[in-house]
Length: 173
Length: 451
Image 1: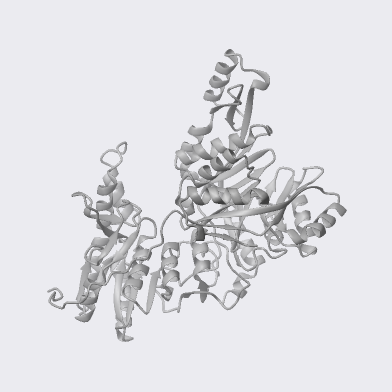
Image 2 (image 1 turned 90 degrees about the horizontal axis):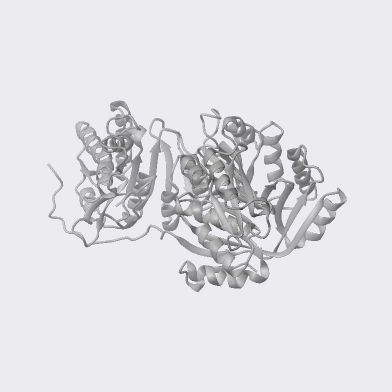
């Protein structure tokens, strides 16, 4: 026995799953990128820990954290730059300070299943002569750190390359 | 009409005893005055006769060197769920309930024609509503749908939804049927703060946000597929993760939690490999990096944990691609600067035979000294990623310092890190993952703070 087919219901259709592929670009406020070098790379893990502890004690938040052969690099809010440099220089670290950077995040619901977003983006930036200073990836985004002044051109090119509407780009002041 | 969608995973339907427990949940739903719509996965896991992987293995055993056509592979894979619906419907029938097995097609699930990873385009809920109105319990095959393409072979072709497909089916049906809840039944009590195999006392979270559960799922925990969480989030459908085998309340997935600063869990991903390239040549570094990204995209390898420094770049990738990556990169020659300089990529400390041959050929052609440069690649073959899900905390001073200190003070090397608004991740040796998860779980007092 099976259910009767005679009951007539109106056809209802629901469309929902998110589109695949790149869906948005979000640009961060200006940040500072800092490269902290230790004078001697022996026992590097401990030395990186000391850098992190210094920042923790000074209540400075950092992000885009990357372990480097000679130390550590990270981004921080532009307003924290002076204080951070003072704290670290007082402890004898060598700093490379790159102010006026922005993080450009390219969003895709299934970024880890999409091939070639990084390659395509890197290609475009290479053609524009823009250096990618750092990269971070997550399940739904790819974040690039670039010079703030180059951001409008980069974002415009990315938007066109990924066929996004203008309202798919959000600038965080 | 109060409708609830109940989804049962493979381990919930893999024995008569388990199916009766699943049926009990369906009956409890009816007794609570709601109409159940059941979604089932294939029975059991690889090795079980009707598990999806077993069916695929059977198909590929005909000739492992010739891959099956994706359309036919989907036809084969969909059989596991169809068998499961019939078995579950019959189980309910023997208990005295009217029940009907429906394929994805019969349940009105329309997808695009990307075989193996199809996306649900729409659902016609009429067939299921018709069953419910007449007091029947529909048992829907998860993980599958049907195309509406125009070609004779694509029109009405069965498609599968890719990883986590049955969860996606359940969430999508929840939206289409305007269900009061979607309940994902599995073999654990809900979303845990860590893998219970590593932390046996890991508590179950009573509530997590859609964003958190999507992040947790992406970071490796296999409780709920993020696609399902995303659908539920976009349409505001209440979603639960519960155990088939207990009456514990489970975990409710909500739009947002009251606690905007909280640490939720310590998931870990699967097997990764990590490569670090030493490129102390600023004039060509960007171009070499670009070539690496291009090559990896060309062979279908997605990178994780990418890190750039002034003298190199590093990235991780799923270890299943190890042979592909090694074959692609080891001994690769990149002619740059109008072919005035050749870069030779070398895996590990000892050059492979291919590397030696390439070097000999280039040297014989007159490329020596500064015109032939080696890029050594440091390899970490056995690594994994452990993460801390830390809403509102991940960029707070000290959280990363504590995470790093927890690992390194226990002698666990951290090779690279990645961070986002919701998570902090470290690439570590796979052999240390259990210890790492336990240490982080303890350090952030997740046993105490879970509920």
